[in-house]
Image 1: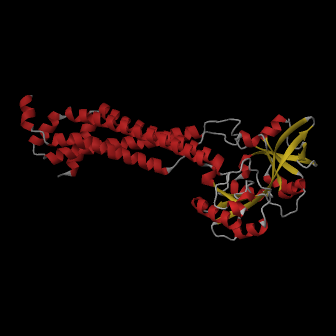
Image 2: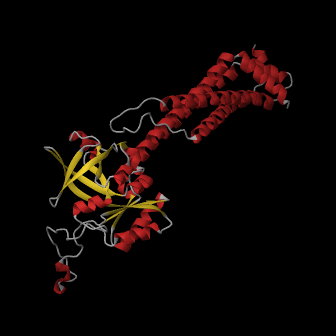
Length: 419
């Protein structure tokens, strides 16, 4: 088999029917390009939605849950032991919101090699007061630098910085929904009334917006010590501990151990976002299903074009076989044509997909729910491009191989006799 002669014949076939060759290559181009555009945009959008929730959700959340006692007084009455005792209107037992021995617990967690960081919080229910406006909500005391390092807190701040809380002991980062309802802006003063009746004046050093209305309309952040003062508690008062791990997959097992060991309610990230994870899985499944369908449709289009291309070359096949070319040589000629079309079309498809993805990535995207997002999200994962060019070569090889097998078995005498 002379590869040079086969390549020359392949090139001649492609250039003499340049229109058909171009149509076949464009079929590959648009199929691969559409696949890359869809996957880049859909996975980029899913990544944005995931980050909105997962970046702000601790891998393990520790707190004291107020719940009914598992054992009621009647359970301790010996004569009724072992019998079915039904108690109606069970009230939650009286317990403290604070985490007992929180500071030693935090030190213990920070010493664990699996833990990336620990962020303690103290939470209080308050009323926001500004003039005649009054709004109920929640105020959380945090360590700003830890929240910024572990949970990308600074990405949600429209005005100001978490560091402004450190510089201003009586500063507050206000939710965008609260600021809008109460007509407040950075630099203004707001009063916070606690449930025990105390009123504390605070200065607005910044405004944040997470994109989740439930949080933005009620939540605000201050220094940890500020909340402790509002609640009238000491410096060891901690109501919540948020833990971030190096490996999120360890959260479920680790939360169970910590909860049992320290008698706390420990919620791992998978449990806290079970519904969200289901929605993400469904979106990803739809994206991959549509993309694979596009590739399959493109593959059938390529097959039809090459199949017709070969049938139009029946006379050429007969002449080649009559002049001494074997059936294998004929098959290699048409497979070579298919691979060349697939390679050229695949490269053009990669360029088309990348170019449109860059265009989408620079297209303005403005919404009040996501103020920090300025353009449409796009995922430039190299895997999409590897899959695209691989499918282009595999599909065109199969599309050329199947009809080329028929060409291999053609009897040149019957073709010439038919002419």
